[in-house]
Image (cartoon, helix red, strand yellow):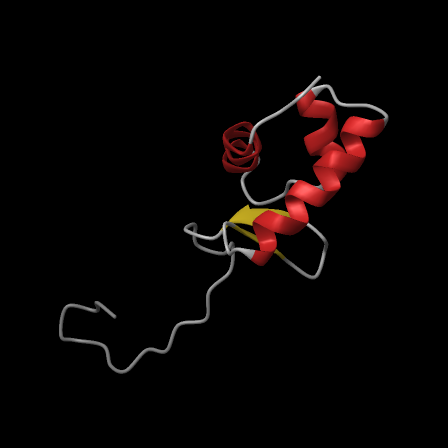
Length: 82
């Protein structure tokens, strides 16, 4: 079975930033040589900036926000808004 980059992006977007190679292969129904092709395609997608691979080896789309973000609060106004 073959797959396309668009299918990978669709699965990654649906995974909420917690998509691994294994879960991708299961979602796309891949086995054997197709998993090897998936590995090379994922590497290409990370290299060209389409996907981001984090320290937990999970993939997310480059145009999506990370799950955690550090914010700096400058002041609080008279209504209590940050």
